[in-house]
Amino acid sequence: MTRAVLVVAALLAGCGLDRRLPPTAAERAQAAERVAGARLARQLEHLPGVAAASALVVLPVDDPLAPTTDRPPRAAITVVALPAAAPALVEASHAAARALLGEAATIEVTTVPVAASSAGPGRARRRAWALVALMIGAAAVAVGLAMARRRAVVRYRGIRPHQSRSSTTRGS
Image (cartoon, rainbow, N blue to C red):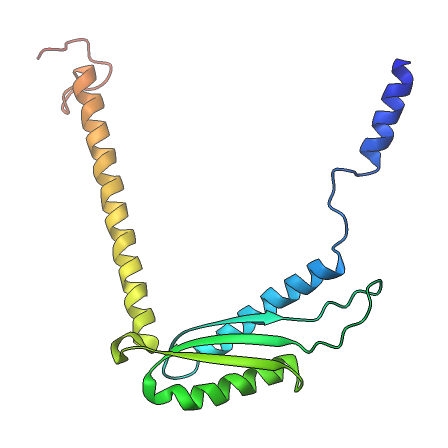
């Protein structure tokens, strides 16, 4: 009886039931949608006057077992940009989405106006410098904490800086 249980357990472990199954057509489509949306958003963020961009892409599922649907790919794009650059960005967004998804794609573009001070590459540089300043501050705090810990250990053991650890005289 126990041999049979061990054999069945070994067979089940060998079958790889703990591993993931191959992705379904819907999972492949979702992964492709995420990649296409991120790619489109990155392309639009590099246009002049754009502070931020996001894109949500919906692709038709190519499932051989499901009935075919003739739905074209769809994209919903939001661009945060300067008000003066909005008309040109709508056209550029349409062109980029059509290049990525095809001519039959349904595309909606929404522009959100933003102040001139928060658009462009200068904002990224300010963020980078803020991150560098934060990292320097964190390093300074870490060094200060290490020094405070060292000082507390020395006080707890009663060792003065001019003494060695093996010294037998504690009070002098």
